[in-house]
Amino acid sequence: MDRRAFIGGLALGTFTASHAARAQPARKVYRIGVLSSRSATSEMTGAQPQDPLVSALLRGLRERGYVYGEHFVTEPRGGEGKPERFPTLAAEVVRLQVDVIVAAGPMLRAVKQVTSTIPVVTTGAGDPVGEKLVQSLARPGGNITGLSIQFTETAAKRLELLKELVPAAAPVGVLREVQVGSLAWRATETAARQRGWKLLSLAIRDAAEIERAFTMATSARAGALLVFPGGLFDPHARRIVELAARSRLPTMYGFRFYVEAGGLISYGPDLTENSRRAAIFVDKILKGAKAADLPIEQPTKFELVINLKAARSINLVIPQPMLLRADEVMQ
Image (tube, rainbow, N blue to C red; front, side):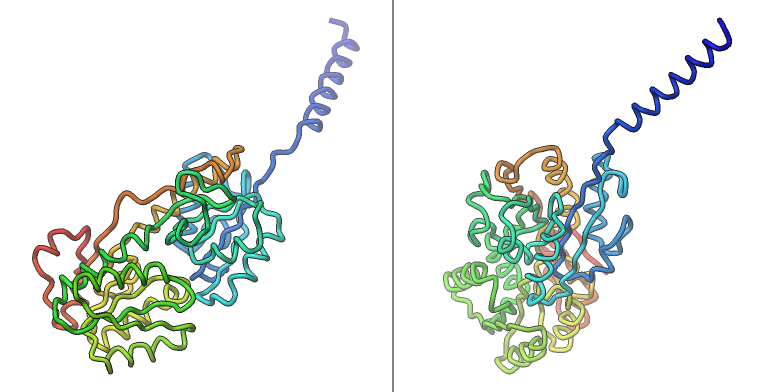
C-alpha cells in the first residue's frame, strides 16, 4: 500500500472514531432523592453511607447492576426525628427535580403534599390505603408505590404478644404520636375492648414530652407499655429503652432496632430487607414503569425478637412457648 494512502486512511479512521465518540450521547446519571425520618443527612450521604437502611437500598441497586457515581447518585435528606422539618426536606428534594424519591413511611404525607408527579418509592408505609396515600395496594393509582409494613393490621398482634408476656390486669400504656397512627390506635383499642383489656393512651406531640409520658404511665400503675414506631420516636429509641428499663415497664416495640438498642421485645417486618427490596421498584421506574401501575408489596415475614438481658434487668421471665416462637433471642 502507498505510504501516503495508509497515513491518510489512518487519519480518516481516527477522525471518524473521534467524531463518533463525540456524537455518542453521555450516559444519564440518575438522581435519587432519599428521605429518612430518623437519620441525619450526614449519615445518609455518598456511596458508603453510615445509615444501615440507606446502605441496604444501595446494596439492592448494586445487585441490579447500578454503580454509584456512574449510573446514579443520591440526594439525601434526614429528618432526625423532627416531624416539623419533614415538609421542608421533602420540598428541597422535589426542587432538585430528582428522577425518583425513596422515602420512609413517616415522610410520605409531606412528600405527597409537594409533588404528584415525581415517582415515590416508600420503604415502609404503615397503612397506605387507610391513610389515603394510594387508591389500593394492587393499583396505587398515583405517584406512590413501594412496600407496606402493615402496621395497622399487626397492631392487635403486638398487643396480644405483650399481654401473653404480662397477663396481669393492669392497663397497658400506649406511647404514640398525636398527629399520626390513629388507625393503629383504633385497631389496638378494638382488640383491647374485645378481650376486656385496659389501655392507657400516652399521646404526645413532641419528643420533649417522652419523659412526661413515662411519668404518666407509672403514676397510672401501667403494667406494660406498647410503643408505636414513627418519625417522632424512632430516633430516640435508646432513650425510650432506657426510660422503660428505669420504669421497670415490660415494653413491646414495632421494630427490632429498639431491641438492638436494649429494648425487651419487638414484632414487625425487617426494615433492612424492605430498604433492599425498594431498589426493585426504583429499577423498574428508572426503566420506564409508572408508580401508579406497580402494586405495593406487603411483607411476607414478621420477626419476633426478644432480649433476655433486658428481661433479666426487670426480673421478667419470658414464657418458654414464646421463646420457642421467637425468630431471634438476644442474650
